[in-house]
Length: 137
Image (cartoon, rainbow, N blue to C red):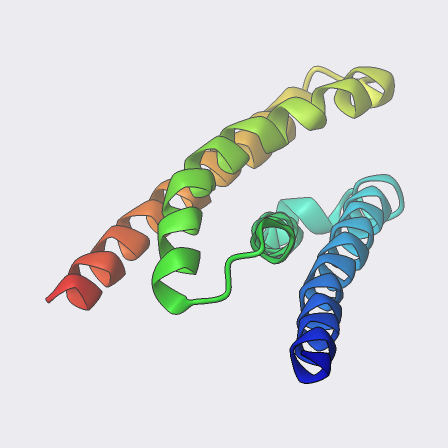
């Protein structure tokens, strides 16, 4: 009975660690998003690598917070969230865009970023569907 209690406590520690890492990763992703949008706005026009990192950071954080641990569960969970995350992320940036709007030319950069989030989510969705089909075989 004591061994079962000890195993249960160890298991709880292992489930809290991914949640804590997920929260920290989500905070770091948010700080990175703020940093790139406020301090390095020209960086977004070059290649938009920050948008990809923000998207990946949010998806990884949600996986860690979900409690999914097996490959099949993680892929199925990601399959469900990649498109909504890609559509919600641009909505989070609207407030910042409105406050920083100075020139009509800024609209193109913002639309570019929104389209990239959706494009990344669709690419991730297709890849995850292919992976899930491969695992089902």
